[in-house]
Length: 509
Image 1 (cartoon, rainbow, N blue to C red):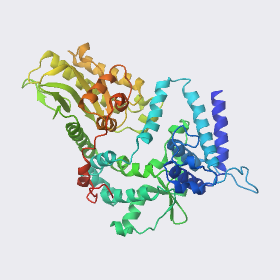
Image 2 (cartoon, helix red, strand yellow; image 1 turned 90 degrees about the vertical axis):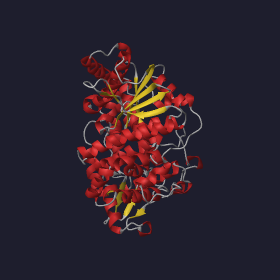
Image 3 (cartoon, helix red, strand yellow; image 1 turned 30 degrees about the vertical axis):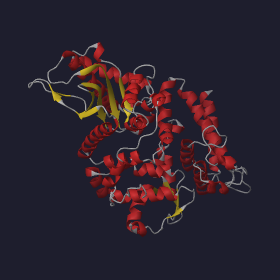
Image 4 (cartoon, rainbow, N blue to C red; image 1 turned 45 degrees about the vertical axis):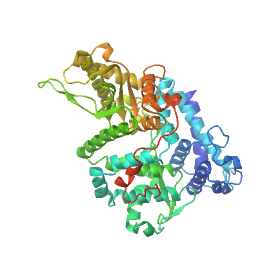
């Protein structure tokens, strides 16, 4: 029944999309995105949207999730079109009816549900939970925030990465970000943007505007070709590649003069974390520098947020003939180390996020995390055995691997494979006892930031401890919720101008 149901829902969705014109449908989706974000003006583009639809949240009958809309845009662009002769077959598919969009969304969700049932015939639910988390959590957390901007610019928009970007894109990265920020703001009301808009008041030339649009936008014809190609195959509809991650803006018209953006948050994603797409081919020296910057950032962030505890970078210890290095960051209480952190900046591939077997698809990345767990265990072993030169380590010292991506978000199965790999490394090393191999939390840096900005050093340590017990498998911010207090300011707010020279201290661009 699973495949029969899937094929039935696939045909129903494709039949509807085959009778939808792309530009007015994308205009309708853009308006819905703006309305759901709270922009009341966009509601008037629909004849039937009630006031309650403005800002409708999850649980409201008028809510449509952004991840569903993203999938819908990709399915729209990849669907074959029917010739429309005479009266339309689906008169209810009017572009000024919110009911029409809700129907398309419902058909998309029904197809995804049928595919979920097939997947769960051969996989346990925790494997699917990881994929759901990878798809939904970034939308729920949001990308338009100061920490995301500063981190992205520091790692991908400065130093060797910035030089590589400018050499390949023909535009300084800070100018690209300025244009991207302007575009993201201009699309928020759900309307189109004219390609030839004069940006010289922002200090942006027409040539620079076009170079930025070459990265941010794609012509309608090319979008259809690309969508059909990248979404071909048997992978679950929800987890197929999205062309909007590379090109969030679709250009319509003979000269691409009408720019439309169904999900403006993806423009922001493209000029923050999405800068990774532009520097990934920069070579080993670029990635080595990004890794070093990530380690430094983690040290500086914990130093700013973990007071009154002390924070120090890695130390070298041991006898002269057998020197060792500690993990990257050490957090101390008095003379004792109470938390050790290893930093791993490797990015997740698309396959690592959504494959049926993520560990097999991204063995190198998961292997790096396993190595980080092993390195922390080795320190615990050395502390227990009293290796010379190592500062005192508290008996219940905690370990954490800080990552740039959400490798183990709701990923109990992948976590078990990482621990197995770490155990193999520990067995090969020798002298790492069972008591040394205690739980090590693996946490995305953005999740760590959220926890610490709503707590303090003590509550953060309690949350780390809970991840090894009753909250095993949770994210650090979720484990920390019971300790959450008033939000603390982001400690690097005053540094944004260091990576974006045009940035004003008020935060206005």
